[in-house]
Amino acid sequence: MAVYARYSELGLLINVGSTSAEVVCSTMNSLSTRVDRHPSGLTPAFEVMKQWVDDCHTTHSCSNFRRSTNNPSYLLQILSGNRARVVKGPEHSVKYIVLSYSWGNPESPTMSREDWKVIKGAATKRLENGHIVPERSNPFSRSELPKTMQDAIYLAEKFNITYIWIDSVCIPKGSNWDAEAVRMHEVYGNAHFTLCASSSRKATDRMIVDRDAWIYPMRGCRIDNQWLSTTSNHLNDVRMNSPTADRGWILQEERLSPRILYWTGQEAYWSCSESQLIEPCQTTRSDTRNIQQWSPAYKFLQLCRQGDIHGLQNEWVDLVESYTRKDLAQGKDRFLALAGLATCYFEAISNPGFVFPEEYLAGLWRTDLGRQLTWSVSAAVPYDKNLLSIAPSWSWASLPLRTKTRMRHPFTMATRFKVMQDIQPYDDRTLNVVVTRGAYIKSVEVSGRLRPFLTPAAKHVTWQSIIRMYAGEEKFTFAAAPEQSVYARNQQSGQILFYEAWKEEIVGQLDYVPSLCGSQAPPHHLYAFVDEGAETELFCLEVGTNAMLLLRKIQPETVGLNRYIRVGVSIGYRSSFFNGCQEQHVLLC
Image (cartoon, rainbow, N blue to C red; front, side, top):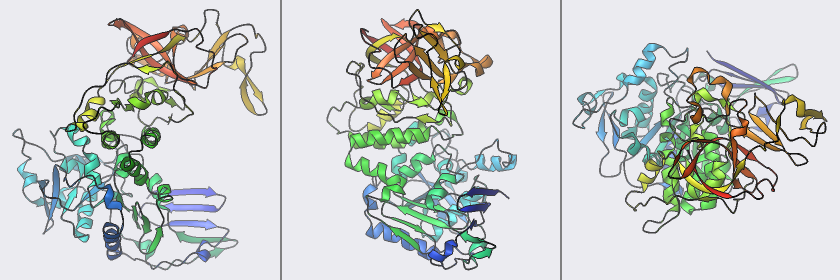
């Protein structure tokens, strides 16, 4: 049984397992200002939840976020007698729900070999002739599926829904994953609602458990000067702390779903663009100006409906900052798990039949490329975990999974920075191809002012020698020899500094820590990091008025273009740093 505890100014917060209730110990009686809820007991309040769904479909504007009348390529049809079968999505629109859940980590000590075998065995297979195996196209027992899936099917039945979409079951092995991935905005956007298994750590966990916590009325108990009582989690806590929260796929599943039912061991939560509810009877309604605070899907979907290019550009960098911190079972899914969002984004701002200067470039967008190139890591990450085989060095997608990044900063494009390569043509029948093709781009030609990071006179010094503590803060000092140009590196954080005599220092952030690459290091000319002593090989490319890329030149040249690989970034340097430097065409790889 898992146990969670946290001490705060309000007292002690205890949460014992995902199937028990949260308990709060506080100096105040939290129940004194709340209305007692009617306990739901061991049976979920299905009639109440069905009313939530019906009200949303009949009285809310959430249906405006529906993408189309298309069904997924395959659906799991729910049959009587505890049976089901995989069918092609009907030509006419049908009601279906989507399951959002966690497979689980096969390396976790809580994952047995038998559990992982059951989870992997849930996948539907495709035969050479393109048909799925008879074991799935014919009715089969639901007990063959992992328990999370079994319970999701049962819940669909309780909502009188005949179809459910579950990823591994409804995307048969051998399918074109690229084609399926760019349709995720339709899969989630067209669903009757998305069911999020927020308490299941792995697919073999039950969703529906005994709900002992709510068979008794909620009453506070005073112990000395403390009050002990059960309480309900806020939906944001459920979202941020659930076993599904770290999944890379969950980002687009939430952002593309107009309606979500979050299912936990003790309570169910409903979230759509106009309401937030908690089982069985607590309700929050708000107008669309405030709903964005708790509805993660609404903001992105609303911006797409409005075609707000500036708003979408800002939203994209926020999405990416969240996405880079999440995990994936396989690094090769880095772009696939974001493809639905990218497709939705592109369709929102493009006008079929018209030339529009937008292009998807390995997770970045051409019209905002300058700003999006200047992402930074919070601290340099181990090089041996990079995904450079998946994405180019200038894309955030090349970073290791679960990397903390910073995407937003004040930015003004440098007047001399330009994207030089032509936009690839497309037509209105193949907009999705833009996203699929863009994920495989490995280089981009740009033009801007370029110069070496260091001057020949710069002398290497240790990081500690230029750090002083002033009023409890670390600050740089060069008072010992202000006439001497120096450079230094912080080997732990990856910060790199260049001080030019009598001028404000330049501070950059390197992407990788080279000392951890070990025997897996690539040939020297392909390094996306800077070896100790190789700082003189660094170049700077002006991208914004206060932002530049740190680059290393690689060989050979391509059609007269110098090829560079990104190794870091510098934000907030002195404006005169590129004075007198020539504009050059470079190929970022």
